Structure formats: structure tokens, C-alpha cells
Length: 159
Image (cartoon, rainbow, N blue to C red; front, top):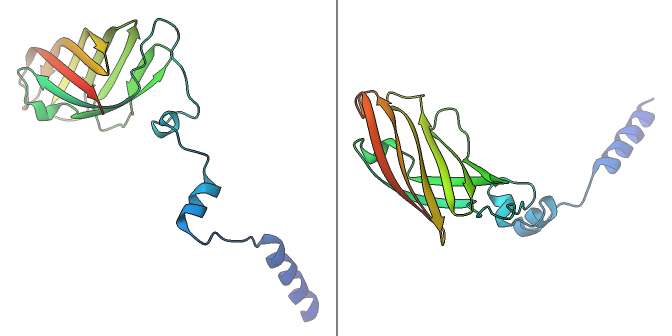
């Protein structure tokens, strides 16, 4: 009976074993497909925007000018695009960035409702050569901005 148990364990071990990679690079190559810009920003495949919609996917550094302290807003965006719509990674405790692009015109929304610095900003802008320029207006509240309406101008530059 012990001999049978040893044989079964040996067969299971032999059937489950595989050759392990000898370097981290070999491991990464065998475990993952080739990473492209499209997969790096979270898409499973490259999605070419439809004709008439500029490609705004990528990582941006953003500079703001307005009443609220600039630290209230996201300093960088990682935009994903699906058709003519785009958004930044959605994290429950971080502000959101969403919009649509038609040609070089952009409709943009910035929202933050999860911290003491709340804002709901909407506006329009344009994209050209990897730079988004927009002006947004909307209500703010909380100790960071105070309560009222703020107008924010921003320039987002693709890395």
C-alpha cells in the first residue's frame, strides 16, 4: 500500500513539474506577451480612434491655474481611450478625469467627491501635438478651495 502511495505521489509530481526559467528576462518573456503602449496603459489590444478623433491616450503631466491650490488636482493623468471617449484610471479615492474628443476639440470633466476638497468642473479645450489645453468651470467646496464657483485653466503635456 505504501509503495502504491509513493508511486502516485511521484507521478503527480512528475506531471505537475515544468522547467523553470533561469533568468528574470526569460520568465517575463514566457509569462507575458510583448508589451506595447496600448497594453501598458491598460488596454488589451491597440484601439485606433475612429476617423475624426485625435488619439489622446498616454501619460500626461498637468499644470493648473485657478483659485484652488494646484495640489488639489491630479498632477499627472494616464488616459485610456475607447473610440472618441477617454478617461484616467478610475480609483475610488482619487479624482476622476473623463472626456470626449472630436477632431482636435475636447469636452472634459474633472470630479473629486471623496475628500474634503470637492469639485465638479466641466469645460472644453483642444488637443494639438500631444498637448491638451482646456478651461473648466464648476462648483467647489471644502477647506482646500472654499465654497463657490471656480474657473480652472490647464495644460496637459504628453510624456
